[in-house]
Image (tube, rainbow, N blue to C red):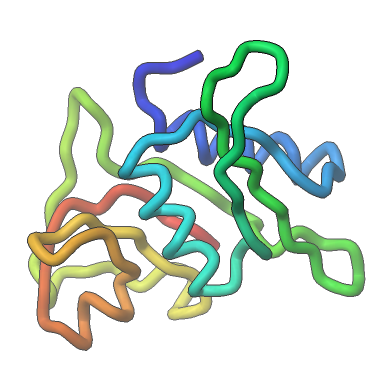
Length: 133
C-alpha cells in the first residue's frame, strides 16, 4: 500500500496488464476516480466500478482493463510525473506531447482532472500527474 494513490493505481494497472489479468482492484479516492474517468474517456481502459470488498467491507474500485485484438495492452507506458517531493507544473504552451500525440498527459487543473488534449482545447495549464502511452 502506498500513500500516493495515483502512483499505486498506475503500478497496479501496469502489473495487471503485464500478467494478462482482465481486471484489477484499486483503493478509491476522488483523484483516482477522476484519473480513471480520463483513462476511460481516452480509451485506455474499458470501464471501472465502485464496489465494497466482501471480506474487509472497505470500498474498492474494480477496473476492467483494455486489450487490443492482438492481445497487447492498451496502456503500454504509465509513468507518474508529479510526485510528492517534486511537483511538475506546465502552462498550456509547455504541455508535452506524449509519443508524438499518440499518448496523453493527465493534468489536474483549476477546472478538474483532464487529458492534455482537453486542456489544450480549454487553454488551461496545471499540474501534470502522469504520462500514459
